[in-house]
Image 1 (cartoon, rainbow, N blue to C red):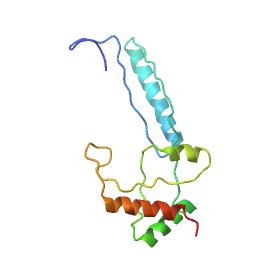
Image 2: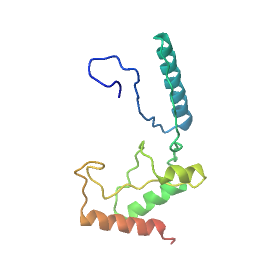
Image 3: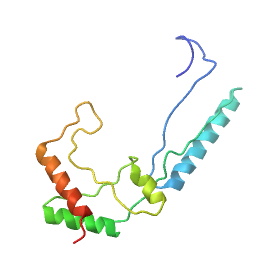
Length: 140
């Protein structure tokens, strides 16, 4: 957002964005590059850039050979579910758990057209999600 009217050179421009990565150091490196680029380019034009970076959460990666993944896939197999594994760039409570040494995965289920105004599910999908949750939490 910049300026107070159309067709003017604004005295102030505010840009908001986010960086997501599966590798935390890579995200931090990119943030540094963005900061340096904005500061350098603004300086070339006689301006200045104030770049504020906040870390909302730390990126992590769970390896496919970890127990939590094997347990998830075993339970899915017992329930006849696909147990598909996919990397995402989303943020969740799991980012905080892994930052404190608690290994886990985010189980996405019973969601269609996610994060849209048309998001929906079915009773059957909710039942399967509940069964999966129960089996994942049960020690046999």
